[in-house]
Image (cartoon, each protein chain N blue to C red):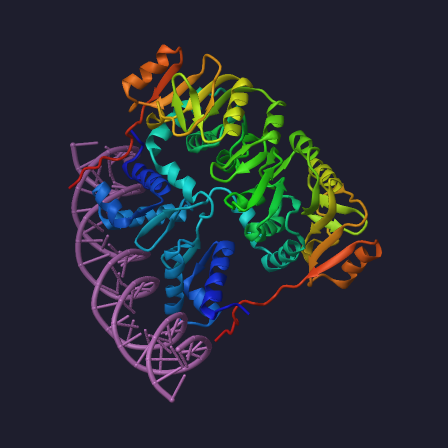
Length: 267
Length: 267
DNA sequence: AGACTCTTGCGCATAACGCGCAGTCATGCG
DNA sequence: CGCATGACTGCGCGTTATGCGCAAGAGTCT
């Protein structure tokens, strides 16, 4: 027997919500033979614990489980990342095969590619995989490998072996930090090594990194890229940062954040 | 300029909801300089289109996009699948390395394994991957390959190549149909070939299929399994169906659906 | 036994909701 | 040019869900 009646009911509510996708207060109330108040209390508690989301007449499952940390990262500097992703998506020609790294900015690119038509996408990241999983018009190849929970990225021998079986028109890399002389900075040596391999398998290499990542070196593993790569950042980048890259012969693109949103005419 | 003022506002609302994660009616009302009624109308429309979910004071993003078809499959015969998954999870010993197929039943198994401690899971399915992506105590290996959107499964040369680099203590396979003489029935020959390979790489093979799948052959691609595999189904299986498997020397397990849920005392 | 915690049901004030009506603006047709 | 049409918005009202306080029941520990 479950430890506690009310606790068990909450778990069951959670289960119903995640499977059915939605559960109304009234339904739940009838199902358990308790008052709507009790159900409401349960839902309030579950919501407070961040385990589901409240809707008007009931509750719904939370996409939740992973991505709590990732989603947060996705939202920060979202406009910049989106602008970068848009520019990157525009570079891709019909019929090409591209390689997408893990990371939120590259994830934003994957989102842009949902509307693409004649395209093959290979990826080492779970984010891109998830973005494109239901898109029938895009051929998706997953390189596989060991999943790193934090970055939602695949690394290791399987990934590298898969890489050796493919080449790409373009590769889009993410980074924890980028410097003009060092290249890409990451937390994990396996990850930097993989990025180097990825760059080597593609005709054109792009690094997608919004302005805040330029000149930053939060970790100590580095990936050096072959000459002729393109840094795609946003217009908020400091001129000095950009200049450092240009001096080294790196092409720098400043993606513009376009202000399509409605007029915020505060009344 | 966007086509229409109200249309643009709705898109913006949607964008705010997906990035911020949540947007209140009042905030939106102030942001756009319109009445709460208008916002409510927008939200109602967006909700009706299935593009976001309504909450009490506002709206929130919908995890939405994938799984529409998959989630539906997940819910049907859910109790049976869960019982099967529980039994399967109980078989796995600490320190083992197991291989999980794609499919909703195996996905339920992956869900059960979220609480496992010392375990390595390899998978050819996106569902299992997603279930275990945020679980730090489980080591996850993705075999990669071509993603089939419908079944959310990886197939093809990359998957097979990755398989050749690993062996497993147990493999848990899904099936569109199972018969005593034919084995596993699937829609795609690549998928059946892969399942055969998977079975060959594991010391023990389990096929997870709820009662409705027994004796069914909805498609015409077949995977034959090596002797000594175990069929895991539920107690609602017809005796004749079960007998057919037992006669052929297949071990059959009937997982019991336990009725822990609250009394459905309809008033 | 008595105090305490947890939980539940009930009643009520409040806030959010949906709906209908009327006014505005742009478009299109006679 | 005038008027009908459709889309959109603001406003008011009745309906509904919500949250809170209070009291009662069940179980536990001292």
